[in-house]
Image (cartoon, rainbow over all chains, first blue to last red; front, side, top):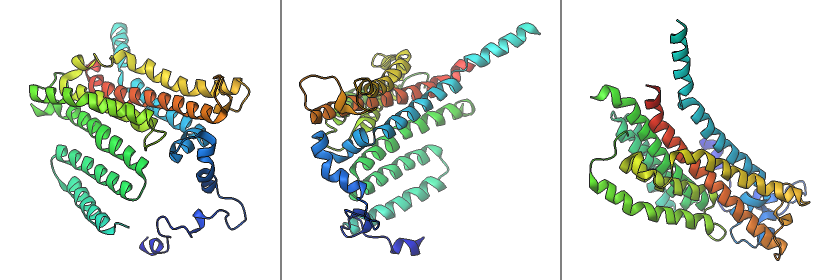
Length: 94
Length: 81
Length: 147
């Protein structure tokens, strides 16, 4: 792991491959497009908000549904009414 | 960029993690995990990822600590007294 | 967790600190366009202010802030705000979650996107806050209902 870490580019390096405008195949890089046109598209200075809320909004919707489903599953596990009813039914039958 | 600051944070992170693993009292362990999360938030902020650091500080050091405390109190209530 | 804290100092400190955390959470949500932050962080801060009161003073006092029976419906409302915004833009002729097609008169498409991002941040914040309070309530009282 140390051997692989040495070869990584420095943080914020403007010359590394992921910060170029076009990658090796000649296609434009997505992050560069976001940085250049985020303020023009949504008039919002914070790029992170625009990427999370507008360009990748379906991802955020999925994340919110995951959080909400976790809460609902916790309600189902911990509410405990069903267990009581089963025990009382079994006692009535026997 | 600020490598001295990050070196201090790394040493503190290692120390806090070892204390959280080795200590016997679980309450101390929970507090040390909160300190670990807060140090991680400071490191994220020093790397320039302010949003991630914000989330780590709020969720890792605040809400997770409260939830661990609740779980601790719920499990040790009967055997304690 | 059944009874609140015995010390009045802790209750007083939590009462003093809680409104400021809540105000900062609202600032983080509504100022997320210009400063770091957003719906998830602001919702977690709002939840932390309520959880501080619940830990310090027991559920009975702090259910004056958010009632326990209100958490699940408001979480559903938060998810529905997000999904409804996307569906409204879809019904008005745009793509799903394309805020440029929202039917708000008198705004250019850029400011429509601005408003759409603000609306979904409110939805995310509401859902995250309610789910975290719900987690605390169920973990603190779920054991007692079984017995």
